[in-house]
Length: 144
Image (cartoon, rainbow, N blue to C red; front, side, top):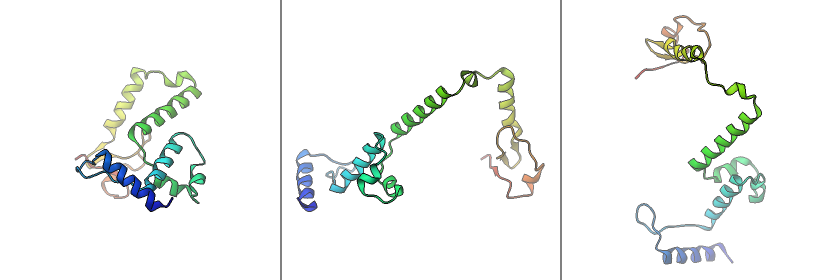
C-alpha cells in the first residue's frame, strides 16, 4: 500500500469523524505523523533504541520527532528526584535550622545592589567589590 493510499484513507476516516482543530477546520493528519507518535511513545516508554528502529543516524534527529508533554516532564523529573533522594542519606534532607534559613534569606538581601541583583551563586563571596558598577562583564540582573 502506498503512502498516498494511506493518506487518502486517513483523510476519509478523519472526515467521517467530524473532528476539528482549534480553529474549527477539519483535522489533518499524515502517515508521517505516526512516526512522530511512535517515537514519542517509544522514548517515553523506555525504548532506548528508538532512534535505531526509526533508522536515524543521530539522536538529534530522533529528538526532533519527540513531543514532550508537561505532565511527562514533571513525572520524569519527580521520578529522578525520588531515585536521587533514595540513594542519599536521609539526614541530607532535614529541615533547615532557623540559623540556616536566616543565612539563606540574608544572602539574597546581600545580593541587592543599585544596578539590580548580583548574579553570583549562593554562599560565594564577592571578589569584585564595586566592580559591578564599572565592569559590564560582571553580571547583574535589573530589578525592573
